[in-house]
Image (cartoon, rainbow, N blue to C red; front, side, top):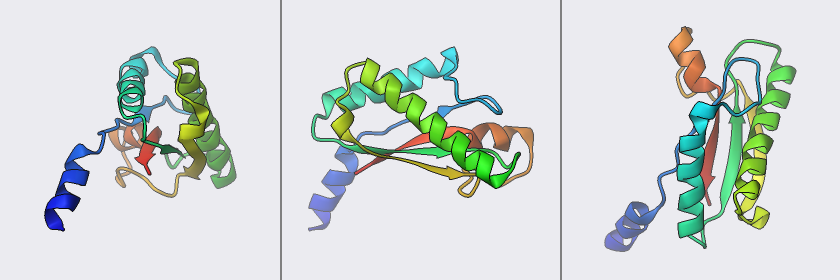
Length: 122
């Protein structure tokens, strides 16, 4: 049983987060490489389905950050669909705003890490 679980974990695609500049839902040119990597993983793993989670840094009102996280995740979904990923394989787009930071420090580097869309394999 452990060997089966270990094989499943090792076989799971390793998605990369897509980062955003402050106060923006526009995908930067520098983020095309991780997006294309994730697109290839989805195209090479036809059974994989994902949830796209939008995240923000701690700046701004909580309600604004929830909306911004949603727009970021939807921009990533649109990019994936434009590259040929079936929208049925993106089972949910959700925003966590600033509530789930990747880095809890209160410094510029942490804020950059927190402005992102995560791909969660389901």
